[in-house]
Length: 167
Image 1 (cartoon, helix red, strand yellow):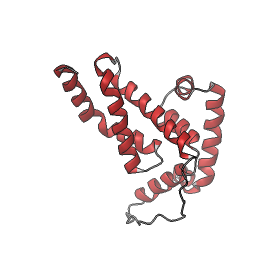
Image 2 (cartoon, one colour):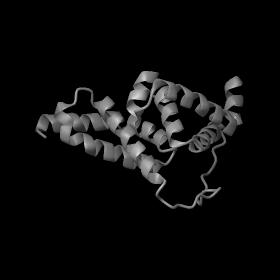
Image 3 (cartoon, one colour):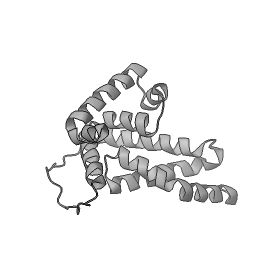
Image 4 (cartoon, helix red, strand yellow):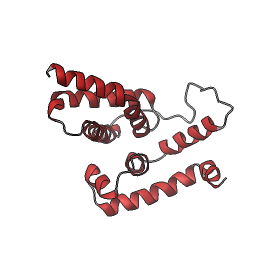
């Protein structure tokens, strides 16, 4: 990597890291440490091709999606014990916004990785269905049906979210 490419990469990382972290946070189901690892691994994979990338943000996001799908595919092999309550308790904020965000995070964590990815790509990234289908390697119909089922499952898992929207 020459000096100009390195400077461009550093500028990209400093300018886009917060947005990439937000996306990674959603893709990992609210796991801050996994989100940080996802961003770091994705940026590391982009470095060797940095000088030849036309749209760096789209390229890094695509790496993130593929990297996270790979993690999900391998996750079934791990034998971890899930618990109803996390070992650490987060102090609740009295504003109500934090409670709503926690409810959304918990509801998202109840979705399958594929459902979560479709919702993130469709509603957070605002990608069209055909682009989502291309990224995920499935048909547009699969994206539509997955989005429909995911939203229904999300609404059922977190009724307080639908109550908040109707207020």
